[in-house]
Image 1 (cartoon, rainbow, N blue to C red):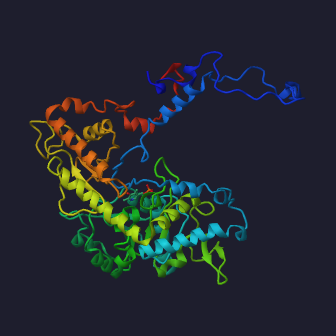
Image 2 (cartoon, rainbow, N blue to C red):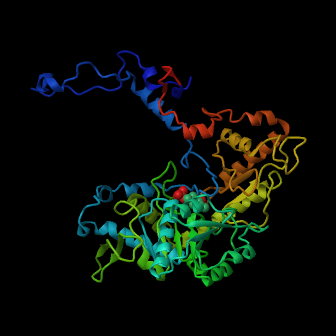
Length: 501
Ligand SMILES: *Cc1c(COP(=O)(O)O)cnc(C)c1O
C-alpha cells in the first residue's frame, strides 16, 4: 500500500506523536488562559510520527505532474522550465512585503520593474507601450479588444462590430470577442494551414473592428502572408490583434509590431518562464502601437522628467481598468528577472532552439505518426494520430477508429514518465496530437521522449489492447474528464452514503 492510498487520519495511532510542545515558561500555567477560551474536548488531530507525515505529503505531492518533475510537451501552452532564481527574486522581502496602497514614493523600486519590463517587452515585440493589468492571455485578449473598440469609438466609427478569427484559432479568441460584445466571423485556413487570403478579402468592409491572429498559428506555421493580410485589414479601417501565446519561436527573430500588428498580449507564463497552470496566477500584459497608447488601460507606470516613477491612474481616452491595483506583480517580476538573466543575445537563442527542438521531434517521428502538414514548423507541430494504429480495418478517414487512438497514445505516455501533449486540438484533424518541446529541454530528454513515442507506435501494432487500457502505472487512470470538471468531488467522503471514496 502506498502512503497516498490512505488518508492522514487513517494512519493515526493513538498516542503516536511527531511534535512536542515546549515546556510552559515559569509562572505560565493553563490557568492563565481564560476559561471561556479553553477547549472543552481535545482537537481531533491525526496522531502520527514525523516520518509518516513527511512521506504522506511527499507522496501526495508526487501524484501530480509538473515542469519540475518531467518533460511537458503540451502544445500551445509553452510549458518551459521556470528558473529558480525567479522565485528567489520574487521572495526578496523588499518585494514580498509591498502593499498596493503604499505611497508611490515608497515603491519606486517596484515601479522601476514595471517600467523596465515595459521597455524590454516593447523592444522584443515592436510595440510602443504595455499595460500590466491583464492576468492571463485570455484576459489580455479581452483587454486588447476593449482597446480596439475604444479606438474606433473615439473616432466616432461606431459600425465596427465584427472581429475576424481564423478557424485554427485558440478557443479563447472567439470567446474574448463575444465577451467584449463583438461579433465573430470565421475565416478559413487554406490547404497549407494558413489564413486563406482569398477567403479573407470578401469579409473586409467598414464593419470590421479587426482581426485576431496567432503567428506562428496553432499548427506551428508562420503566416507568411502576414504583410499582405495587414495591408488588407488596415485598408478597410480595421486593426490587427496578435495573440502572443506563440511568441516563443519569434524571440529575437521577428517582431509582431514589424508585421503590422497594432495590439497584442504576451503570455508571461508561457514565453517568459513564470509558473503556469492551475488557473494562475499568470500575466497577459497588452502592448499597443504608438497610435493606440492613449487607449491603454490604467493604472500605468511612467518615468517622470526627474527620473522618478509615477502612476497614471486615469486617462479620458483609456479603455478602462481591467484588474485590481497593478496586476500580478510577482509574475511580472519573475518575467523581468528571466529576461534580464538571459540578456539580448540569449533571448534570441531561446526562440531558435525551441524551433530546432520541435523540428527534430517532428522529423524523428513522422514515419510512425501521420503528419498532415509537412515542412518546417516553428515551435510546435501537429500529428494526426498513428500511421499504423494496430487496427486491420480502419480506413485513414474513418471517424470510427478501431485501433489505437490519440487518447490511448497520450495515456500510455504517462507510463513512460512524460506528460501528454495537447490532444484533439486543433480541431482541424480528428486525432490531433500537438507537440511543443520548448528550448529548455536537453537533447537526452527529447531523445527519450522520441524513443517512448516510437515504442508506443510498436505497441499499437503488437499489443493494442494493452494500450487501450493505459495508463497502467499512475494512481488515477482514465477518469471521466467531463464529469471530473463538471461535478468535482472535493472531499474524501461521499457524504450522502457516508462512505470513503
Ligand atoms: C494559452 C493560449 C491562450 C490563452 O492564454 P491563457 O493565459 O491560458 O489565458 C490563447 N491563445 C493561444 C494560442 C494559447 O496557446
